[in-house]
Image (tube, rainbow, N blue to C red; front, side, top):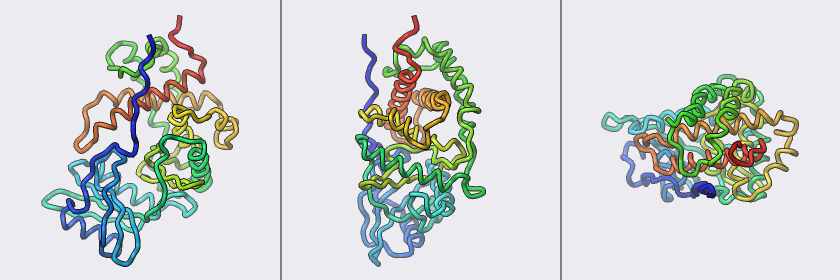
Length: 332
């Protein structure tokens, strides 16, 4: 019996968002104030991402184009994320391949807090499917981030990647005990490897230590690739970690799309010479995080695609980890 394949996710169509015309007038006013001009026209909201907040390209009366986000406290995570992103964008060094902040603001609408963020519009498309060219552009963007954010400006990073391993310590023991529901796409060998996986996650404090400012949520829909250049967007989780973390987080899905990622790992200055076990620990921690969250109910305003995304990430991260560790199947 073969394993079920990883679920497919179209990262260009994972959310339902309000349109410009559906925003409260007070929110539209704050967006125009943050943008520094009247909105002449609005493109349809993007359908990528998982938050459900407003997010669209706007053309201003003076001819400029900006990208605006707005979310309400119906989903508190959105308010916090957009506020945090505004702080990070304002503090990023110019060399970082990220949109520049245009403005931000808040407004209370009938007792409901709204957070607004306006950034410069940048060209590019989400890399789906992954191609060698898109990965090369994304690799170059990661190199530029590492150069500019090692170390990051004082006070800009929020937390450390080493913190991520703590909450995942009980995931694989729960798999062994049968108390964590596993998705249908989980590899059949998983229950037989929980001991080794638990040991890997337990090493997170060692493996994920680093002094580089990492995006820490880098995935296809947080990248806009335009030819040989990639821009990284959605900077609300800037965290201290190893220089290779953002790049490695892209590789399992690129591998699933048929791109040779092992050669890149061997040649990239970000990963060349890194203890392979550190990368394996990272893969195990992310897989554990996804397995822990995939069965949970959706939060208010969340989109069902987030759970499919988490199942896909768990499976593709585990697949690459198994290949790297030489796990051909269940232990026997």
